[in-house]
Amino acid sequence: MSDSGFGLLRGKKGVIFGALNKKSIAWSIAESVYREGGRFALSNAPVAKRLGSLDALAEKTGSRILWADATSDKDIENLFEEAKKSYGKIDFIVHAIGMGVNVRKRREYDRLNYDWYQKTLNISSISLHRIVHHALETGALADGASIVAISYIGAQRTFTRYSEMGDAKALLESIVRTWGSVLGRRGIRINAVSQSPTRTTAGMGIAGFDALFEFGERLSPLGNADAASCGDYTVTLLSDLTRMVTMQTLYHDGGFSSMGISEEFVEPMVKAAQKADQ
Ligand SMILES: NC(=O)c1ccc[n+]([C@@H]2O[C@H](COP(=O)([O-])OP(=O)(O)OC[C@H]3O[C@@H](n4cnc5c(N)ncnc54)[C@H](O)[C@@H]3O)[C@@H](O)[C@H]2O)c1
Image 1 (cartoon, rainbow, N blue to C red):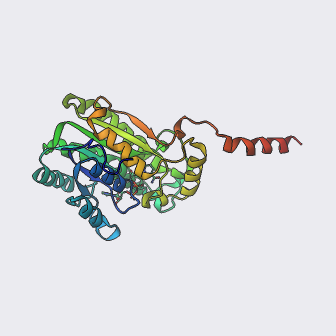
Image 2: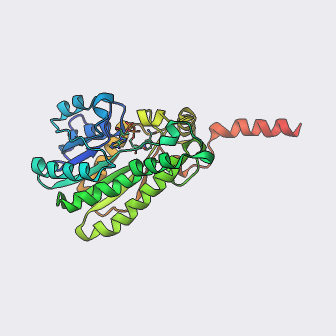
Image 3: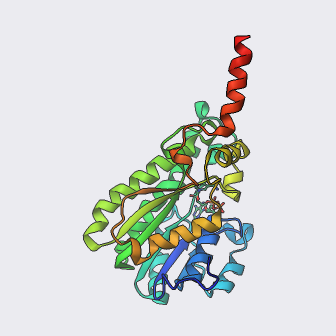
């Protein structure tokens, strides 16, 4: 990867949601976007002021930080009013927000706390709807803009420990499709990037994350995609090169989603079957 980038986002301005610390997928996306000439405001929930290190990223990329709880209409509306003042109309939005409350609190799927479940959906999925809604209502979004949300293959397949987050990602991807049909009238596109397991604060909060990570690593022909490569991939979707791509879930997973079984798993299975036959 060229250190100076290719200028793919020169002149584009946007808002990137969800960078907490260096491990965050949004942090890597911000670094890639910056390298490609894009400029942006960074946003996170006010609680992240004490939990994360967003100031360092803001300083490095010359960005404003616009604190906003993604479950609050007022916060998100204010955010886009402020973004408009600083950047004019914006050309891209990155949604990299997620939190599984039952998952965090180790409540399994057969005994979910429904208040927490609703909180999970509100933070992880409905927030995308809210962000797009207020970006439109405030007039902050430019025609031809591009929106990317970060998802996981738990939306399509069951990974037992992923639990309620599978439902949240299924809703997120559905919101991507439904908004896409509305936004297309203004040439605005919206896509989900379905990312490999990645060692981040949210990722490692899932019980059994190590198993998901290891499984992905062994099954994917290219291995798991890391956050830095996700940043680079996201740049392509924010650039004009992909201007006719919308409403998609795009797998950024080293090939995981197309695999059934890999050689890594064949040998032990054959041995187990032979042993059972003896
Ligand atoms: N880590 C993985 O394995 C993995 C894989 C696929 C997809 N994803 C998705 O990537 C996205 C980014 O997560 P990450 O893995 O980088 O972890 P992360 O913990 O670094 O980022 C999650 C972010 O969500 C923010 N957030 C939580 N509640 C919020 C609220 N109410 N308002 C605003 N922001 C809020 C957090 O402060 C944090 O910055 C999430 O959507 C996650 O589900 C992660």
